Length: 164
Image 1: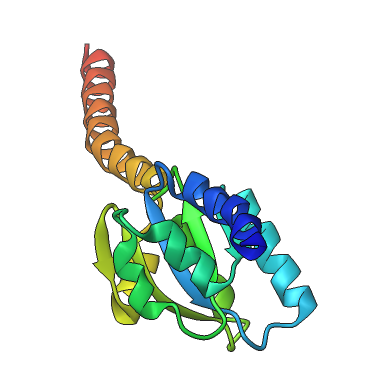
Image 2: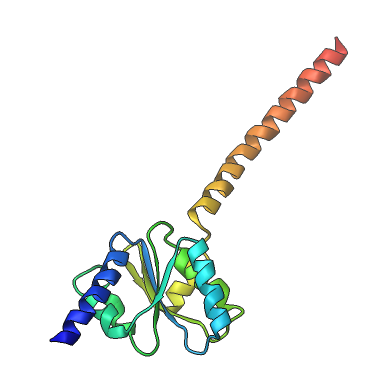
């Protein structure tokens, strides 16, 4: 009975992190050095991503009855959880970027915006730029033709004033 009481706060902590999360990614971290793990945690924190290592049974209990329940089939072996409540692609993007240098780090699976993705799917999600990047690219593409049009009009006006 005492062991169950000890687990409740941990399960509740995980549930609190999952509440309102846009993305949850499972990561196999076995083989990372302490330095690599520290750097990964720092990068995740800077991106607003919660990166924690929990026992699989704790995560399993926490996701029961939630939209993240499908992750239970991937809770085998050493598993870390990366959670974001703001940017849907941030956990996958941060882990995938870090995994380029730390070859032992692997994406297992994830749920992004309510949709389950296996290893290959979550790797594709990792290639999607952040919302802010997409908006700035979109704004740049809209702004460019307007700026070019303004330059042409300005040149025409200058040319007309020189002729007069």
